Image (cartoon, rainbow, N blue to C red):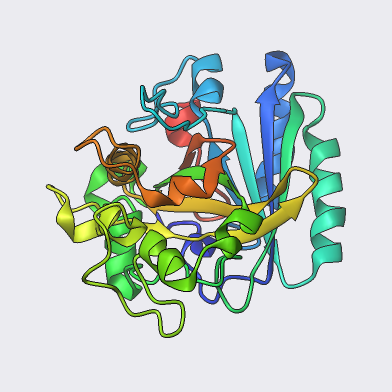
Length: 292
């Protein structure tokens, strides 16, 4: 088994579209999946399965769970859906047309409940101007962090994706003096250097992957977004399980040591979902753990 190659492919395409579906008619699901799977190449179209879909089928995919409901002082909404489709392209018009076609194809069984158009900003910077994913594992280390290993049987080649839509208050953030902005992020905007003297609440310090026990390595594949809801970061984190992301989210939220990540001063997640990205078989994505 191999993984869906688009999960780790570089560079990230200029445009992305995230489609989230809820299951409406279980009896129509087999025919819809038969029509959908040939469309999923794992590169331009990546498929993620949410726990509600597995539950509807009476299956238990190892490692798949729903987004957690954290009892924290800051909000981390859980908006778990049955299916997530991640479309990527260098041409926005193609994404729009393909998203329409996929919505129609899935309509007998699924309803589209959310759609997010993303874009690569200045080569991979957040809308704040700071570089995103600076400490991402690379090459084989990325595979090790994000992909279930070969000895895991039929789950080999899988990946687990945490997906959130973060909305930034850009007016507030840009009103702050530059040193204060740098302290919130934990890096200097001018050269992306990490600030040793940054407060403990700095985002970089809250999420330093090697500072966890066990280490919480994951691969971020985020892009910017903007629509009628506002603007911010369409966050995607890939792991061989959800554990690394969840450990980071708990610490960011102050549940580990009472220190809340300064990111929450100007940004809030609007959504949160967990999805299993199945491996690729010989000819198509392999849903064996889901379908039996």
